[in-house]
Every structure is written in structure tokens, then in C-alpha cells.
Length: 277
Image (tube, rainbow, N blue to C red; front, side):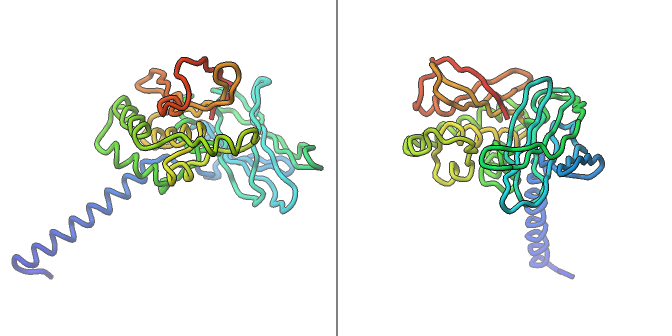
């Protein structure tokens, strides 16, 4: 037991440290992360889909462990589909159900030869989410982060005490505009590359990135603070590939193009949406 003034000071320090630790834990726990909880698992041939959280706008998918043959996943509804690569470790990955409250087909494709793939499993998933924006509050392949990702921790620090989505949105966008630059060198060296995913860690560590890196990082910061944010892929002007952010702030769409804000493109150009994640 502690006694006297010295003891009280020690107790005070211990309590303060405990509060700091608890606050940090609570802050991290607020970041929504996908999980394969196993309450609803669908299987067909080589595909396994955990649809336990389809009502939250995502599924977890895994295929067989494959050292040589590549795997792809197709998420489809009503003739509209999105194709993704799937890891070859036989472990779950998260895929968003961003096409709305409807029935989806999830198909696994196994590489046969070169660019030729064959279907090796298909399941149906009903996405009865109460909020169609819920999938834009979780990470996925294109907006890839965890509670420990540096930009997520920064968002928590930046938005501490904020509850209004408009205030959070403004704080995050201002942070991007004042702390990052556009990576013109990378934009030239990766020109024409296909299937390249945004790199949030590269963007954060170098304080620069191309359009999809900057947009994905912005989305990660907003999502982690409870603001639904789409990473939009499309074209700019007469057909230049581009990426930007479309958030939903207090029920209203909020457009943010970090590349334009950093004066790397013109804000007056026409934006054409192709897909979003």
C-alpha cells in the first residue's frame, strides 16, 4: 500500500497512465474492421465465402492455397461486375458489396494459362444492409488500412473530440492539402500499369503520391472517423485515368480531388465515374 503525499503522487501517476492506455485502446476499437466471424459460411468447389456481415456491406472470401496459379474474384449483380485479385495463401480477404442492397454472385476464377481463367466456384449472397453506405466505413483492397496504420492514427489525433462529420471532413481534407504533394515522377514511371492498387503507406511515408494513393489515404482517414468515403476511379477531361474521393457528409455528397487541390490537375475538368470502392 502507498501512504502519505508521496504515495498519493504515485497513485496519481499510475491512474493517469491507465487512463492514457484505456483512451488509446478505445480510440483504436472505434476503427471498424472486417471479420470472418463464421456465422454464415457459403462454399462451392474451391471458393469459401463468409457472408456473416453482408448486412454491413462486405464479405470475406478465400480460395485454395496456390503457389503458382493466380486467383481472381468476381463480385456481380444484375450484369454489373467488379473483378479483383485474390491472395494465394488460402486466407480470407475482404470484398465490398458497394453495388447496393441486392443479391450478389461471388465467383472464384483459377488461372489456367497466362490470362486465361476458369470458374472454380460460385455462391449467391443476399446483401440486406440497412445502410448502403456501410461498406464505405471498412477497409478493402483499394482502401487498405488497419487500426495501426499511421494515417489512421493521425486521423484519430486530428479529429479527437469531434463528432460533426462536416468538421471531421474539413479537418482531414485540410490536412491532406497542407501536408502532401503530387508525385509527378511516380505518375510517369507507372503510366500504363494495369491492376496496380493504391499504396497508402508509400503515400504517407513520402508525403506524396499519385491520384489513387492520395485519394485512398483520404478515404482511410475519413472512414476510420466514421465518415463514409468512396474511392472513385474514372477519367478526367477527354479520357485521362484518374481517382478522387466522394464522401457523404451529414447525408450530403462531398466531392474532394486531392490531386486538383495540390494543383496537379485542373478543377474545371469533367469527371466521368467508372467504378468505386
